[in-house]
Structures are given as C-alpha cells and as structure tokens.
Length: 400
Picture: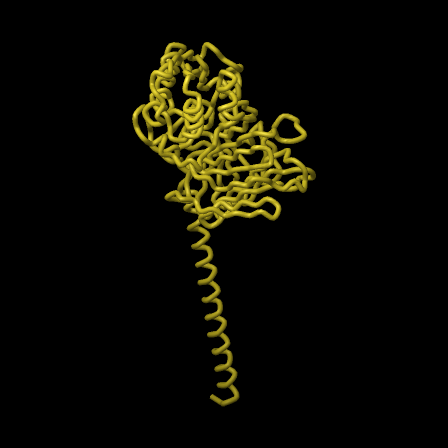
C-alpha cells in the first residue's frame, strides 16, 4: 500500500477515535446529569402518597395534635398533663400568642382533591389540593408558584395580627418557602425565606437577618408562625424565634396582603393555615375582668396541655403574681364536632388541666382557681364555617 493511501487512512482513524471519545465523554456526562436528576425526582416522588390522580405524596411526620384554636402541628413537642415540667421549660424567647379574632382558617378539607382551593388567589404557577395521611395540603406542582389568601377587603392588614401554618418540604428545597408582606403596587414590606442553607433568612428594606434552625432536620414538617405588633414583626419555627424586627420598611405603605411562594422541584406544601387579628395583652384583658385565649393548646380529644401554651400561661401567672388578691375561674369551650356529652366532659377536663399546670409549673397557688367547662353550649361564632369553629375552641379566664 502506498504512503499516499496510508496517511489519509491513519488520519481518518485518529479523527474517528477522537470523535468516539468525545461522544462517549458527552454521553457519560449526560448520563450522570440524568442520574442526579432522576435521583432527586425519585426521592421527591418516592415520599409521595396518593393524590387525586393516584400519584404519590410526602408522608407527614408522625403524630397529630389540636388545640384551643390554632392549627395542628406534628412538631408540638413533649406532652404535659398537670405536673410535668415541659410547659414551663419552654424558652421565654418563644412568646407567640395567636390572635383572638379569626379571619381565615383553612385545612383545605372543603376543596376537591386535585383542584385549586377556593379561598386562595393564584399569582403564578400550578397548585393543587393533595392528601397526605388523612390531611389535606396545598401543593405546588410547578417549579415556582405564588398564592395569597383571599382576605376581606381592607386597606391594610390589622395593626395586630398573627399567621401560622404547617410547611412540608423535601430536598432539593433550598428557598422552598418564602412568605412576603406586600404593600402598594405589590411592593415588598418584608420577606422570610426558609431554608436558606439551614437558616431562615429575613429581609425588610435594609434590615437583614439569618437564624439557624436548631432542629434535627431541615426536611419534613415544620410549624411556622408570624406575629405582628404595629410595625414590629416576629417569626418562629416550632418554638424557636427566627426573626425579631422592631420596625419594618414602610417604603410601600402598610402591608395589605401576604403572599406565599413555594418553589422547589420536590413540590413543597402548606396546610392548617390560620390568620387572625389581635390579640391584646393578657394583663389588659384580665384587668378588665376576662381573658379569652386561643393560645392554650391540647392534644386532640384529650386534656394534655402542649408546651407551646407557655407564652399565654406565663402572662396569666405574671398577672396573678402582681395581683395577689385575684382569683380566677378557668372555663373550657369546644366547637360542636362530636357529641355534646363528650365535648362537655372534655372542656371540664381541659380547664382543670390548665389550672393544674399553672399551679404545678408556674407557682400559682391552686386555691386561686376554680374550673368549669361548657362544651359547645356557649358558642361565640357559628359552627357552620371553619373560622367559627376555631373561634369557639377557646379557654377563658374570668375574675371571681
């Protein structure tokens, strides 16, 4: 074979080998990318339980709890009935007390699976109502989505208000939840993002903060709370304070709307949303003769007082300490779910348990209390709507 023939053949062979190597390398890179993507997708889908279309959906944390008025939280912590130490041991930095006039409460049970919820407005993305271990959730099925509560027409949010809800997220979930307060022309008064690494990142104008969550896991279910007092705002996850801003930005006026942004390929979700006006300081209401509170929380169907009841119980104990001659009647109230007899019994046991915790853990003499329960016989709102039932589940303290 002549040299003229061999050289071109060798050149062609070299080019073919290079092309094969490049193709193989590109294919390997694509395969690795696909494998990583598939792994993340399978992780998100693998934790999914059934929804309207038979897909799978994330499993909730074990446990179920309810309280006098706020949403349930699987992360409520250890149980206390009477003489334990868990309630009084809760950090004084956890001072969240839910508002006493419920404006919106939504567990999505009134909505059809797979549909967009009736009491929410859509700004961007795709959302659906899904079911997880018997609970309904609002799930973002697109990579990014924004929704807001349909609140009554108002020029601005109330001066005092509280918001709480349960959030569920899985990796990848960096920045999966952002809550924003919006003012004029949808200008941002403040925003809170979770997770930012292992932190909640908060911003209002030039003010920024970033606080590390002290829990065992970023993934899973978390109870998120916000409490506004005029221009001040506090944020909490479980019983940890994550932000404390004394004065938010007013560049766009007073906030008039709250927006939820859920953006992660693992489809984050929220449920048990409660937005309420108030509440006034407990000492002021007690000075007037009667305190109605939604901040004392119980296990479902039991008289177990949960640790996140600590803030309001501390306030009651402090008032009694400075007013040594005051005695109180503690009265429990329920909604009309269940039989009248069981509700009456439960309300009496809960009132007795509250008095016992105040005596055993907060140092108030037991003889300063009388207890009673009214079950569902003294409703303050209609039980026909979730907001009314939330208003009826309460504990009252009245001067004797």
